[in-house]
Image (cartoon, rainbow, N blue to C red):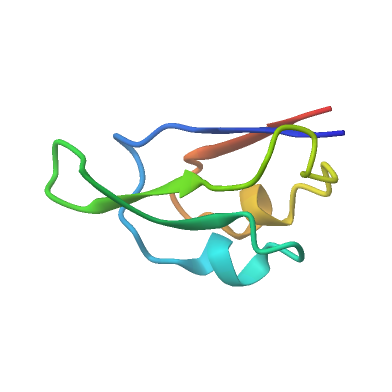
Amino acid sequence: MGKVVIDIEYCKGCELCTTACVKKLLKIGTQFNKNGYYAVEYCGEEGACTGCALCAMMCPDVAIEVWK
């Protein structure tokens, strides 16, 4: 299974990754980053991610890494 790592300081909250996630495991969080954007956060259970990395491929700011 995959593990999603999000660098909230690079995230600008564009939500492209949330639409790309097949299992809908990402959502806009409630915390601001240093630039004033709501950063995306992982909302699934551990092991729920398939590791497809579509979210990381869609991220224009390279704020997401997916590890298998």
